[in-house]
Length: 600
Image (cartoon, rainbow, N blue to C red; front, side):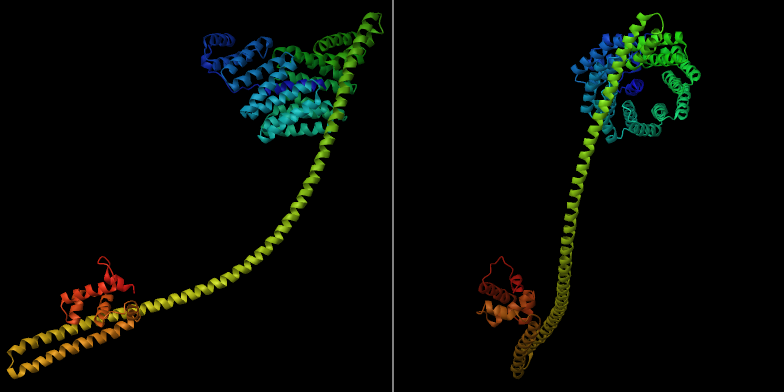
């Protein structure tokens, strides 16, 4: 199972290494090597921020080979980014450090570097980078058989990916969780997560990783005894990666097919596919992005088991020794104990007892390590199951509490609904009553408005009639005055005996004219302004009839000249009468007399 852990670890690392900060390519000389150009730029650059980016790029050039030489530039990049207060420079130099440490198999140092990078990404809110780095920390924990911590880390990254809609990272995390559950032999969960990963990769158009996720499903088919389906699946994967010239995955696929044929005791087919796997590795070592030691250890072990089962002891020992040596150097415990077992069994039957004893001890030690790893897996699986059961119990309690709260809310809602219905009924009843009252009030108001309008129209008509009548009286008075004046002129030319008669006619005309005009005016005025006289006399009882009459004329906004024409008094007399009226009423000279009388 270590194979899938390491294999997917490097897949995830390749997915990470896409840094966002960079340098103009024109700054790098086309005649020098990239490293020399970068060193020249670093030597002349004075800005700490720009220099940290240059160190980042220099460290990146060492990721494919000579990884140890890239550590110093990356660390210097971190120092300069801190000095320049440049958080993204800190994070990405730490991320490169992590990549370099992984390629050197220093996983603890790599994990620390990735944790530093992830912390900065989180503070900056760069959730894509944060999720990637968190995923790789989970990969490292998985490679170190720290299953519980790996699961928690993956789920933490998955939560970020789901919240931020990072669908491609989500697919990678589902794939890696599938690997984790395969490693602890929980095949149901492994298949579930792997299928989610396949769907996610296909949706994103990432066929390479979709095929890697399919490999996990085919591994599960092997555990279920579905050998033919598994072989067909792995050969499809091989054909896909042959087109992509991805030699690591081609070798991996061939070796898996060989292992399945070995399990079925089809040794010739197993030998053929294992040979194809070994040839692929040996011819394409320069193109491997991950450590070739792991693939060689797997293939050597597979070939050793195949030849041993065929009784080809010489070939079996050759590949077992090679597999054991490389496995011990890289702590591949399962391969080490399998190769040591083959060597011990072969040598114990020969005269080379010392060698047999050596490999016997090696077999025991390697097997103990492998069994310890298996025990760790079983314990981890039990621990994870216990944690899952506890989480499930808490979830069920939470569901019960949630349901109880929902029931309480439902009762509250029902009660609130009943109260609301009652309130609505009362409000509707009150609204209808209020509407009836409002309608009645509106009808009454409309009626009063109509009555008021009618009265207003009548008043306007009376005022108009009064004004017309006044004009008629003025014209009539002027006519009588004209006749009177003519009689006065005639009196002086008349005979002596006729002068007295003419004088009597003049006096009678003046007396009857003034009296009739006033009586007719007063009758018309009272029809229009019935309360005026009463209000005036109540407030000012000392007014004389002439002053009351003058007040009525002024109430109609008549001018002094018009009043003079009606009353046959001079303008001067009318002005004097107005002065006395103002004084008797008690209003100032500044106040308008006509306005005052109009308001009574």
